[in-house]
Figure 1: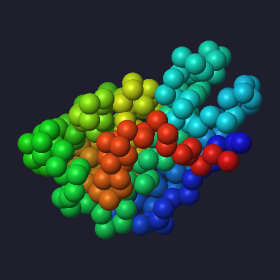
Figure 2 (figure 1 turned 90 degrees about the vertical axis):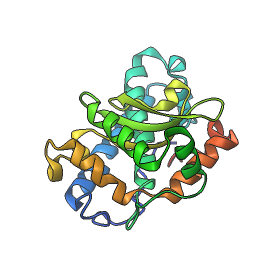
Figure 3 (figure 1 turned 120 degrees about the vertical axis):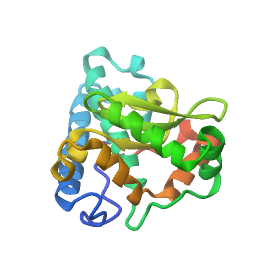
Length: 216
């Protein structure tokens, strides 16, 4: 019942020139691959957790045995975060959002441009490695948050509707230390269809019952 690295839903060079082929290859195969490998290694010590999805594991970290809790937090979080990340991007993506996600962005932040500004600013100010998120909270509202390392909003009782990876391995080969430039360019590959799907899943209240990620 090992967790598995999901394939990219597009070619490694499909998001050029926003994300270069070398970065995508290293990011998916090496970094995400390592999270999956390390998560499986940690869970070997507790076979009773073999049937749990990565989401379920990080949803209640206090229920994870202490000797593997940090490994599950870091690697399970990395697995969940990246599995989302690949899906919310696509070739020839970007543009203005439409549908329910556009409505909630306008209602919450005033306009899409205001939302982008606040999202990018939060991502730029995240100290060290981490993520910037649009997260759903109980009651159906949304908010921008950041998390350090591979922490997931799921562990805070929130739902990750969309998020951008601001670890240096996500952008350094192309953008070097220019994280704000990467954050601005990233909107050109955003997959609003997938983000709308995630938002609708959140609104339906079924987020605690999503199928396991690449878990067989």
